Image (cartoon, rainbow over all chains, first blue to last red; front, side, top):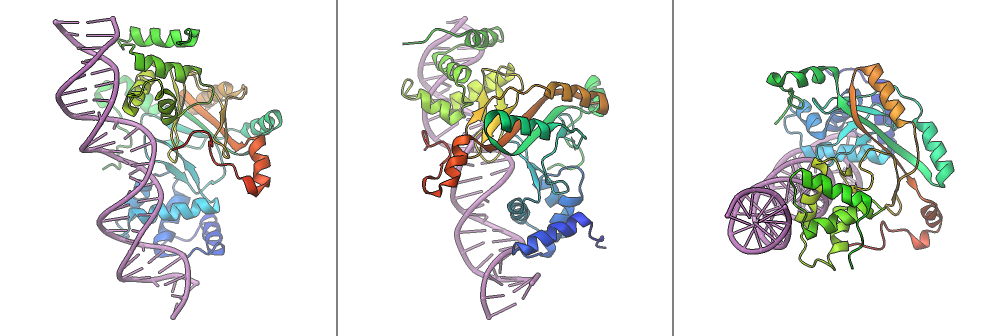
Length: 162
Length: 162
DNA sequence: CTTACTGCAAAAGCTTTGCATCCGT
DNA sequence: ACGGATGCAAAGCTTTTGCAGTAAG
């Protein structure tokens, strides 16, 4: 029932182990979701996806596992103050995101050039730039259509909610 | 004692008025801070700066005033989930920020090119892009120096804290 | 005068923490 | 066995909300 480890998942567990973290079944499952979900899940989403398989999983464990990943630099955290943070352990290095304000989808567009901006900025300002965040907010094609038909409005993330 | 209105402050109050919002002394003071502070203050910071002049000001009023500004599109909100949000009513349109992780300073570097990226992205993905956020995180020159002398570490925002 | 605004306190979220028990290594 | 991890519940923080009194237009 357990799928084979992807290279990325293997790299994460290796890193955690060498930092002294233990790989428990809960952690492995959480890491798998974080490393293999292309949708930048929230903590809640990770939790709910795993609950059927691990009925006594706790939200705290998901938070703590993500804290471990952050300490190792193995996850990218997209912070929001008005909604749940979202996580990407598949690509922990900073990269641009395209966020649909209709359905909440988060995509990873290919968009080079930011690194160059960072270098130019560092040169111009004297700052040492360690990381960055580039998010574009808008409406995906689907939500643009739905926006025109007020009948069937598009609630954020209709699939999995409280 | 009251400084003359800057053009930006006048524009904000005009916009609020035409939307049916009332300009109270508290609001005017809050708007003044938000529109004229170059340091992207937090709600707490706005509150503490005004407390000497308006001793019974409440935090809720600051939050509510910012909500009004957001509804009118007259303030830029930089959201963080692990610290207070920061606000810029001087330049409400999206623009890059340079954030020092040592002292918490937020600067407005001149850095064109993001708009072009947004247009290219919209074309390539079919998304309609409404806004964006570009933040660079690093250490300002001062904090780089302090980082080397562990003696006098640089606490975030040494001037005004709880 | 009408209706929005203020300040206070309570409520709401999301995230973190304390602790006893459990289980990787 | 040792020491970190888990799960539960409580605590923490920032932000929002409800309400009675107050004041802008």
